[in-house]
Length: 269
Ligand SMILES: NC(=O)c1ccc[n+]([C@@H]2O[C@H](COP(=O)([O-])OP(=O)(O)OC[C@H]3O[C@@H](n4cnc5c(N)ncnc54)[C@H](OP(=O)(O)O)[C@@H]3O)[C@@H](O)[C@H]2O)c1
Image (cartoon, rainbow, N blue to C red; front, side):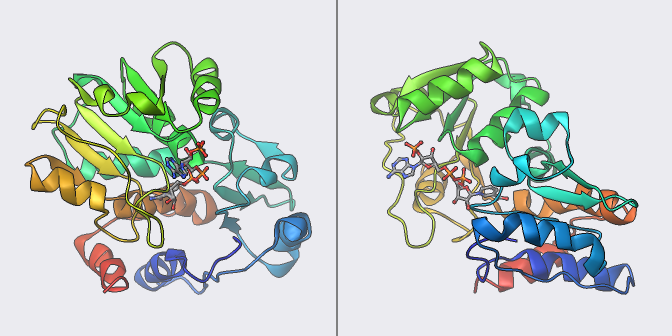
């Protein structure tokens, strides 16, 4: 569920798994206005759904609607996945952080969050999941740079002193000595201008990730790759966040394979 939803690649992802696992079911995109979210979610049990995913702008609103919110979703402040319990109650969790971490584990097996400072650009829902994931993986310093400083400050206050809020004007300097850099702003997304940042101070051995997957390579990632940094785009995050959803909905362990990845990549061609 999302508003709008037509751009979503989730049906492609989940219907691939339905076919792969021979499960009689389907994943449908449902356009839901924020004011209709409660009615839509409450209809899930009667319609026979095992659950749903939520995307912009519904992730925060769902917190007030579902019957249970787990500790992860509470910490991140957003629900990305709803599970329908056998008694019809709705449980909310957040799998975006899992998607982010497992994307890096799979695509950059040598990567360690604790290897050096991380820079996270952005302080929205995506950035909150990234920070949570980095902390789970043992990050010792997260420099959080956001256009609206107060939002970075609020996130840092919630997540503890490992997260250090920085002003947007400090973004170029924040890259000095960083081992991991993540763009979690919406800048560079299809239809948006490129992220405005200079990479001169960034070491060549730093890993640069973008959680955006449309386009697959943002101008920010292209610039980082062009100067020799390893780069990871956000597609893997989308793919991997689906795995715990399948475990919760159907008790099935799914995999992110090269074939699945190329099915999704082809949808951007
Ligand atoms: N790969 C995945 O599975 C995945 C998962 C979640 C999100 N995403 C992607 O991540 C991106 C962010 O999503 P979100 O849910 O975190 O959105 P969000 O909550 O709306 O946050 C947007 C962030 O971008 C910043 N921003 C917006 N315009 C800017 C500008 N002109 N200059 C600098 N910063 C700017 C905002 O700063 P302010 O606080 O100053 O407004 C905020 O930090 C989207 O492209 C989304 O598709 C991908």
